[in-house]
Length: 282
Ligand SMILES: [Zn+2]
Image 1 (cartoon, helix red, strand yellow):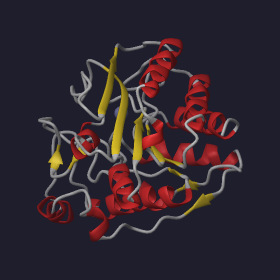
Image 2 (spheres, rainbow, N blue to C red):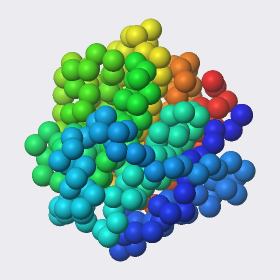
Image 3 (cartoon, rainbow, N blue to C red):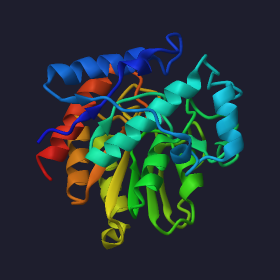
């Protein structure tokens, strides 16, 4: 059965001038629609769900729009967009779907910018972290976005119910994740590393996980590792098929949450390849 895509066109309503703009998600949506995927509409997350990860002062500030930093604008009503994006992640977790929403989340920690980084990298609320916390399940978070998920690492560092695995480009934003710390396993890779070496590294990283400890897998699915994108590791469509295959072989209930990926056409085709690799091998 095809993975359902969680999507609301409301997520297109802000930030047309920004690199993290609506077109990337709209184009991906249109491609996935043309390929026959089924779409489901999320509901906004509530405060209680958001407070499972973020502290009350930070949530207050997001609601008031007091969250501007140099790469993360305080758009009008950004809280409502962020709340709906968290809702997408929560629904994806319940139905083992793919949340195709924005804003992304993995750079934001409990109270905003994380691990000493000065900005929140286009993120307001940590979608995947909230869904993992709310599931209550012992979870492996696999972050395949080309940037290190410093927010997710901060939230789960030392949490024995969760392991965090990230492969990302270095040097690049946010500059964290250069080494493995306890339950947070990091591989910092040079730009245009290439598909074959990437997949070997992914196999090595997943081999470090005691899968018997975990009930579920959550994937921070960013596609800015695609050749030419903001954190290129030189990957092409077929490489995402191979990544999906490896996720399937973990044999756990799995959900997916969009992070980065800034060329909509590539994002759509990469998601389709990734989900095909996943579905044909689970
Ligand atoms: Zn990224």
